[in-house]
Length: 306
Image (cartoon, rainbow, N blue to C red; front, side, top):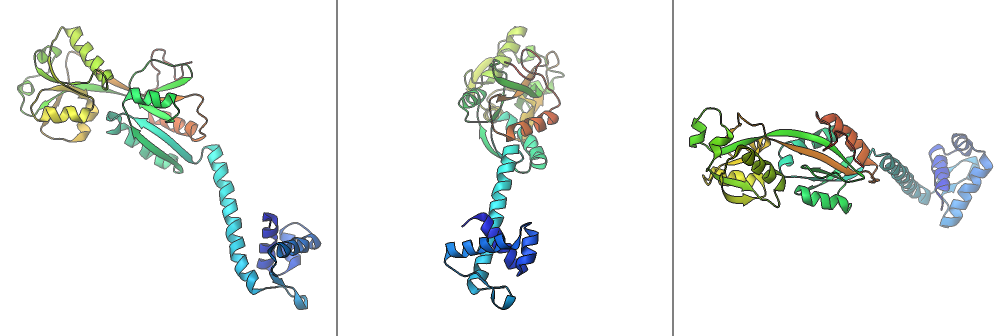
């Protein structure tokens, strides 16, 4: 049984006339009749009653018509799906992101993707930047949103966001009653800090900020996730420095303050491998670049390093 035979049968069954069916199929009547005969022979069933110069469906033909129509529709759908996947109009992307980018940036980006790329699905994995780098190297994710990293040949980078770092303290803290805060105001304060391993990016930023000002806070706790730091700060166990997007967590009983004498910031980069052959990736990248308001790569102000 061949698809061409099914198309011939369906056309005759719809027209109940070999001449009109042949015209619709852009063929002559004898080869059309031959295709129906071959189909009936392969099935061992008579599908059409051709008596008295009329064409009628047999009982078997009526039932077979429904199945044949479904098969042809499914075949067309399968072909359309394959074409859409090959062109990148549809497909699946595996996306890695840090916890902080999941507060605001990634949800907004996925919301835009839902409108611009409705037939592309996403598998999401929350990971620290170092784990995303390993996952990209192993082709376990298609694209990552990471903090600053050393450029790699064959990898492309796009600056996705830049946000200020802010001092966070329990509501009612003595520092909150002062005017504009300076880095010096944080000297000797009990401090809830990012882990030097899992939170290396923020750890280096904050340590560098204090070192430049000659300030020595008292590091009491080291944590890898921003929401955990906020929890300890809210409990009165110290103060911290976190990205401004942490305010999106709405934990309450917290006071976020900027530093008047410093403008520390945190950058987020979109990163992907140039040899990734997922057809959906270029469409997502183009959409994401339009979404981002900033667009420079680490170290060399280009969107690609190699």
